[in-house]
Amino acid sequence: FIGPTESIFIDNPDLVKVEDHEIDYVLQEANFLFPQLQLTRKDVQHCWCGVRPTSTINGKDVYLAVRLSEHPEKKGILTVTGSTIMLHRHASRLVAQAVELRLGKRGGAPTGVIKENGMVLDDIEKIIREEHVVRLTDLIRRRLQDGLNPDLGCHRAKELSLIAAKVLGWSETRRLMELAYFDEDTQKVYRKINSLS
Image (cartoon, rainbow, N blue to C red; front, top):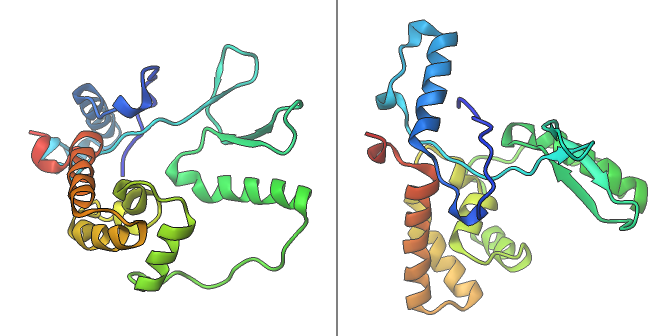
């Protein structure tokens, strides 16, 4: 994983996509730092983009580091800005500590490791029911590890769409629409390798 670009984006977040100049910039910087790699677009398996909220302390300068804040007039509403996927554990610790300060500690921290492919059907159905899944992309990219796999979750999309349809009561038309949207999102946001040349 190489990046991010930190490009400023002020349009509709639903319209964000990987731009060619961003791919070229990341490759250029990687080759500047590691000239022996001689990376080209042919070396890119896939790429992705997203919108990351940032903070400002003085109302002008952007603050990129992970920051947890609470507005003085809206006590109890916590906001996390500046976090990237690489810092998700750090951001989670900040949130957990802030919540514990307000609600008290519930017990010891969880132990053990989640086993790869160790999730059973009941777990997936519970996630769909209890974690506010709205679209198939929500499930694959934001609730399960499949979205971070090299194939971006494409190999299990049909199987997961069938489970989501059962739990959420989707019609077959809606299920197929969700699969089509997932594929469109994969092409637009994540730019699979075959779309980079």
